[in-house]
Length: 161
Figure 1 (cartoon, rainbow, N blue to C red):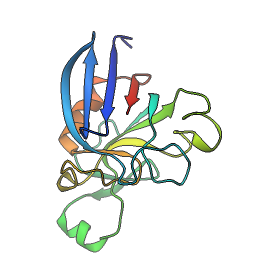
Figure 2 (cartoon, rainbow, N blue to C red):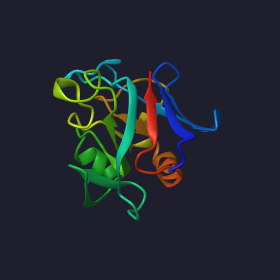
Figure 3 (tube, rainbow, N blue to C red):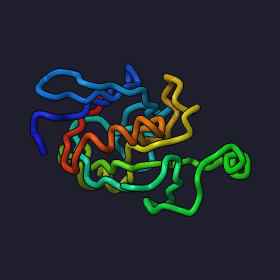
Figure 4 (cartoon, rainbow, N blue to C red):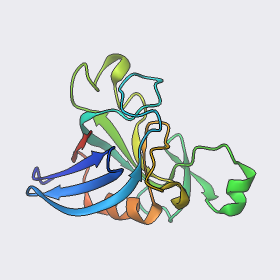
């Protein structure tokens, strides 16, 4: 992994940016937590600070593949499936599982980002509308998460503010 690459997730801008050699090379619209920033388990908040990509999940799966507990199902998200399960928190296409790097802030104990299962993941594209509405994860449009997934490696650093 190139250590000069990192992701910046701005909850204020509702945007994730790829930084290479201190320059923004790509940005995508996102949706972070409707409960704001916070690290406590069960808060429904997006954790702040330094993280890394712990795992990349879903390589070679088709666009809009539905994931449950980080495993691909046989489902492909569409309007009919959405209507059949209106209360599902959709995790689609790809998952970038985050791990906190700051002991006591977002790593270990009741604040551990990885144990909270905080991801950057695809969701129904219509949910990306410039507003924070997730349950803690960072949601992205499906084509965007696929593009991001293919640009970064496990271990890539992520800063959330």
